[in-house]
Image 1: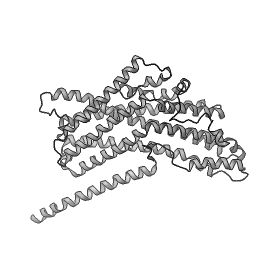
Image 2: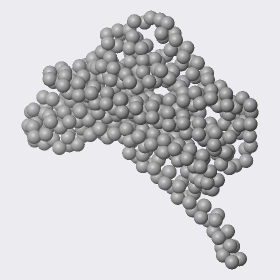
Image 3: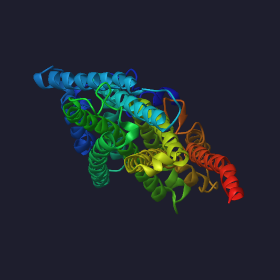
Image 4: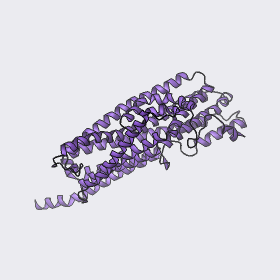
Length: 433
C-alpha cells in the first residue's frame, strides 16, 4: 500500500519517460533565470539556445530557433573539420616533445568537439534538461506544503545560485580569453607547435591570414572548453546548496526535539530528500557524458604536460613552450579539481542526514516511526548518491583520492626515471675531471 501511494506522489518524476507540459516549463523559469548569464554566454558562442528552453512551451519553430540551430551545427562542423585537419600536424611519429604536444592538442580538440556535440544534443532534445528545472520547482512546492514561510529560503537559494553563476561565468570568460591568447602565443613562438596550422606552415605566404582566422576558431574552442566545464560546476554547486539547505532544515527539526515532534516531520523530510535525489538524477542524465569526458581528457592532458615538463629540457628552456605548458597545466588541473570538489560536495551533503537520524533517541519510538526511519536510512546508506561519469561511478571522495594518488605516483616515477637516466652522465663527467 505504501509503495502504491508513493508512486503517485507529485514530486516523483521519471526523466526518461516524463512528458513536459507548458505548466511544467513555467515552473522551471526561476532556476533558469538564475542561470541566465552562463546560458546566454553559451548561446552567443553556439553552444546553447537559451530562448528555446525559455519558450519551450510554445512549440513553435521561429527564425530565432532556426538561426541558433544552424549556428550550433555550423560551429560543430568547423570544430570537426579542424579536428580532422589536425592529423596533418603529425609530421613525424618520432617519440618526443613535438609528438606529445600534438597528441595533447588533439585530445583537447576532441574534448571541445565532444562538448559542442553533447551541448547540441542537450538543446535539441531538451526533455531531460527541462525536467531538471521542473523538478527543482516541484521540490520547493513540496517544501511549501509543510513550511508556509519558505519563500525567503527559496529566494536565498536563487540568490546563491545566481552568485555562483555570475562568478563562474566571469571566470569562464577569463579562462576562454586567456587560453585563446596563450594558444595564439604558442602558435607563433613555440617550436613544438609550429605544425599547428598544417598544411599552412609558418613559411607559407597565406600563414598570416590563416592564423588570423584560426585565432577566431581558437576562441570558440576555448569557450566550448571553459563554459561546458563551468556549466557542470555551477549545476553541481547548485545541487550542493539545495542539499545543504535541506540538511540545515533537518537539523533544526531533529535537534533537541521530542520523538513525537520529530515523528510528525520525518516523513515530510524523507519526501523532500527523495525529491532532491530525483532532481540530482535528472541533472546526472544531462551531465554524465560531459563529466566523464572532462575527467578522462583532463587527466590525460595533465599527465602529458607533467611528462613533457619533467622529461624534456627543450620544453623548460623554450619560453613559448614553458609558458604554454604552465598555463595549460594550471587550467587543466584547476578544472579537474573544481569539478571533483563540486561533485564531492554534492555526494557528502546528500548523505549528511544520516548522522541526525543516528542521533535520535530510541525511547518511546513507535513501530510506524521505526519503519519510516528504516526506509530513510536504507536510502541514505544504500548506493552512493551523486553525479556520475557515464553512469559508471559516482564522483565521491574515493575517486578524488584515487586520481590524486595516481597523479602523485606518476610524478614520483617520472622524477626517479629522470634521476636514474642522468646519473651515468654525472658520474662519467666526474671521472674525466
